[in-house]
Length: 109
View 1 (tube, rainbow, N blue to C red):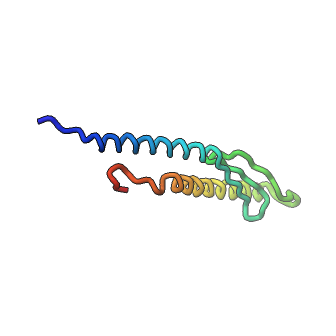
View 2: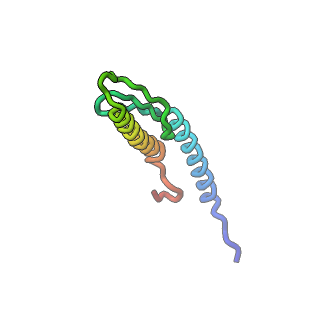
View 3: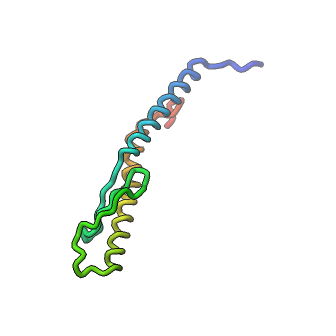
């Protein structure tokens, strides 16, 4: 016995697929523009991280007078870790804003 094709369901599936593609493109654009700037706790180092998690810029913003190499290294590591965490948080927020209200095909979420 041949299966009947539910044209309405097929049309809904196609429309849903197109909405997903549009939202994925919107998410990709938003992540490409996303930048997070973070400082270490002592405000010695500033790190800028992109939405992709890549470090885009590291700037020593504080005075290096009397600062040892290990202290500077620790400040850089703290700022990079904080920037990585902040960028991950920002990516989750952008994803939630983009797909948070998306309803799957058939009304299930």
